[in-house]
Image (tube, rainbow, N blue to C red):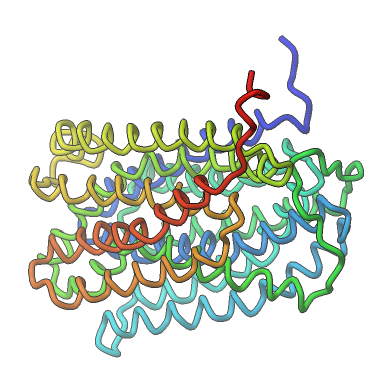
Length: 431
């Protein structure tokens, strides 16, 4: 069997699948080990790490990948500049995380809260090297190396969590430490791979509008609007754990929140698929638009629209039917979720799928600036729901649904109008 070329996208897609499986193993193992109340606390820390990594640091990766791929920046220089951009983001993440835990515990954090705050420091510090390294590796086309960084992050935390579980550990803090350790390990591996160097980047036909080197200030300006949009997306996707962590002030409420978060963990499986798949379609669509191939871009967008709507519908049907029995089967018999609550969870995930793909398509079609306001409006709507709805289950599940419906209501028309304006070939020239 022939081994794929190190530049093959197969490595990235395969790495995403294995990473997703390892992440699910981590969450299921932690849920079984610490119980529903402990899982609520772990989920708040986990959500903070995800919101920070994919919301604040992933834009740094994307900007570095573009500049490295076009030759504006190179290897170690790009990595160092990316780390400088990422450092204040890490400091902000730690401060916000501290404020969230203080708000949750009424200004008197318990031992788990302090462990969560302290362990987010090495977690965020790891992001400062991890995501710039990923950006450089992606820009250089070193997809095997990129996949290796992703797998180290997911693999280390899952492996440590499994060892802790098998040893009978039921405290939350050691599992938080597993996440921090994986972030640091991933950062060290990424930095080593960047320093090892690779072949000169090959922009290829799908790189659009190669930017000149506008320096660190220009890169920061490019990162900012992406951070706004991505923070909104990840804030909504992780609104359930955040709201649960803030309002579940008693052990009974924390246990109920843990049940709902277990259902949300399972329902988000399609999100991992779409997050990996965006690397396959965003650049090609942008390339088609740049080359004036409007008909090709229109056909691809139409197919994607049908696919994502079908996936969203399937998520609702399968989640509604299988969610209630599957949650206790995987997480343990103490996790019980009502079917009505599961319906709210899967509807929220389905709405997120549609809105997030619409966001990707807006970026591919050159409508980047419309994404930030759309997600800001969605977050505002979600906050209103979380503040006004009294029922715990509704407060945990409805913000995702309402916020994504609002964001999608802004983004879908933007995409539809942009597609309608794409140039068409004359009738006689179509084949």
